[in-house]
Length: 558
Image (tube, rainbow, N blue to C red; front, side, top):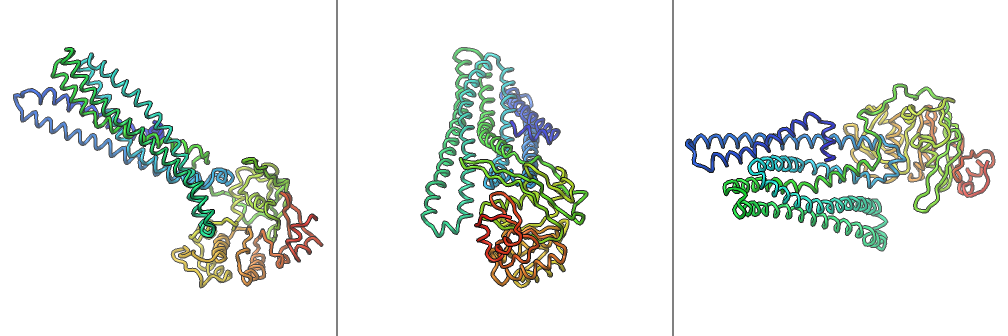
């Protein structure tokens, strides 16, 4: 009961109270049967009093059973709520490298499917606890009625549970395989959604994705869920039939072999019939508990950052104090995957002075984006040092260092909330200023500090992403191929008007760009080639400014 242990760790006294209520209701249920056996099956001198006592017992049983079930259900949903919050916070605290290894589809699967399965496990947990406790209490009562019958009944039930355990083992296997199939299905869903334009244009590709990938995952899911349901049904029917068989065995031993009186056999039968429904319900709840345990194991396998409730806000931010940022002999290696060789970036040394405008060029796969991630602190260097004004950055200073940067990467996400410095709402004056500079004042509507509609062209959406970055008022602005989606007119506005405006405001701009017509706007021009960084100067810079493609493809380095 891994799920119950987790709840017990966080709600020790609450779960103890709930278990006490469950035990009390189970014992009271057996007491009701004993009362029927002793007072209702034989003529009573005062039947009215017996009826009143019976009604009182039923009312008390209703209160205890309802209190136990409702309390556990409320406790479970509260735990699931906290777990969902903790899981999202752990994702937010996990390094970019780890999230990229896990994959977006696996994270979405855990946030949706795993949390749903854990919720369902809690919904059915009262049935399992109540059925288990009631069965134990009923067995104790049966042992008191007739030890001989009880020993035989116990052996019979042990055989029943043994076979049931084998069926549940197979059920557990297929539920685990089902969860793996679900991961693959989420990956296929993401491919269908993200690749919708390409799949619409190329129906052959759409057919191959549908038949060779999605259908394979869907059939695996169907097969495992079918087998899981099959073993679940067999386990439930087996438990139900064997409980009924217990009644026949009891009457045979009592009347046929004379082990007990007919009255005792009748009480035995009544008790077994009474616990039949809770016991079958407990067996029916087992699949959800297994699925919940599989979900918990899956969440743990993600190896996310430990849960910390608070967000980090550095007490000593670096903003406003620094003059020089340096990467000194920094190295980063992507390990080999699926037979493909790895890729090394570095050793790289980069000096970035406050207020500079620096452009970076390089071919695909040259390491430009990796360098950008290293510079911003999204990737932690595997070797080398990051320095601020000559001082080596310590492990505890990474959050403060990252707050120096605002960025628009090529795979940016456009948020709707407009935030200014330190997470406060952006001022109306700043918003109006930057909307005007970006030529977006009449293109977007803002209400309650949020963008109301972001269904715009790719270039306009990128302008809004830049707007969000500018409103944050960070010291360094990192732009990854930002102008690639802009029309020629606004591209000129960006390079000839916006960049000088940012430089005049003291902002440091590090831009990955291949717009050679505007290289004159850069204080320095850098080039990545095969994971190595070089600065283009003199003739090399002049040649890149005339035709960046020739310089990127050439063999000359400065």
